Length: 458
Image (cartoon, rainbow, N blue to C red):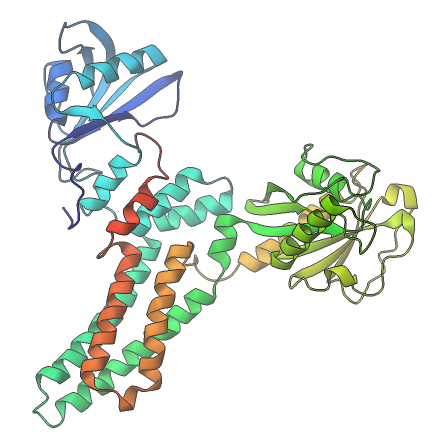
């Protein structure tokens, strides 16, 4: 078991339903801990052959009352998912059956209900998973799109952990070389040779970290790219929002200023997540206090968006030839979406200098919406494509890797003028930060944040 195991991990045996909420054909009840075997004996009268499913009659350990007939698996540690003795009961999935079996298990001395994430926490503390795999598993359980599933699966099965081990290997080799130079300082050539050999390892590590930190694809896949719908009042922004979301998420009215707050909805763009944002109609004057606050919030979200769809009422005349002044502060790409083409007649789609893309739609009839969705999916696919899976997908990952890079940069910049002892100390600090990624060291402050994301029984 790793250092820092909490007091609650070890003597207790935990039990919980690991399958979905019933009723269902089958429910899976898992146990982990030193009394798992005793619990199987108490309910079935014998232990099945390890890792072979066996049909058994389950009876209450106190009054021998019939509970169910179930498939039982006995999974002795340490070669189990948690590293402890484990067992599974695959029972009929009715709620009453599940409740009865859990109550019977709780009657076995040393067995208690599991806390959220406790099975995975024990797997981590017993060295069966590193912290990046734990986080990947949490993301896999919560994945809503195909892109999120692929990324989460890669991390759950060791993608980032493998990358970090490669980074750690470079850092450890450099540390060993510098320490050797310190140990053999009396030898004239050794410190110079070891220092010269250590620098390329650190330069390669710094380059790899810079590439990983510059790659935002993981953040976009996991959190979703933000697409802000902006424009003048009554351009049909909320109608377009509802049409793209395929449900009524925003109030639609002819009255200017109806949308007074930012409305967000998740969108699956051909397997990738996007967050669609409907903002208040933008105008410089005539807005009341509440509408003005809505405009302020809209501008803030537009400024942080990955893409802005500027919606123009095609029935009101030509699109603005210059970038709308009120949205000029947006740092994102801007597309022009000419809406209400059903009322305006054919739209030529004349290009404007400030728009990277021009599309014509009718939110009311649905004309042009498929082309808009295809364009958005292509735009997002282009941003997310290329290379292997991104390494750093959480803010925690980026913070730790960024701190390692911050420590390495001045070392490499001032390499020739630094003492070996100072270099060794800074490399030890970098190793601590790198260890935070996988949880090899200094992980206690991270555990509650990571494991509270899990459901009971996982």
